[in-house]
Length: 133
Image (cartoon, rainbow, N blue to C red; front, side, top):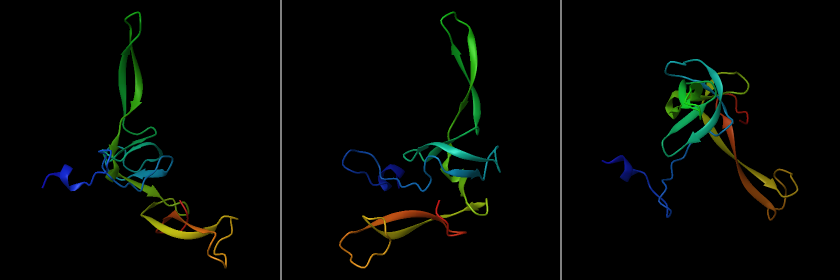
């Protein structure tokens, strides 16, 4: 089966790939050259299933200035999303991500008696410690 056909696409042609890792999350690298390194997520590319991490997978990118001199600048390259795991906020170890649906009223109160002003909000939690990420 072709992978492109197995991913559903919406009306504008982009695929609906869901990713539990978001920009700004604290993660740990679980595979590759930087295994065990704890860092933060700079960018997430859900279509390609890749993430760019701070100070991980650095390469020198060569550029030329107007005088023709070559300069080398460190550049972060993406790694596959399966090689990282989210850090648990309490235990500082790798954890899975779960979703918890909470009822929040417009006043900011949770679980109010009358249900007409409530809205449901998804909160990401760490499965190891049940704390909000």
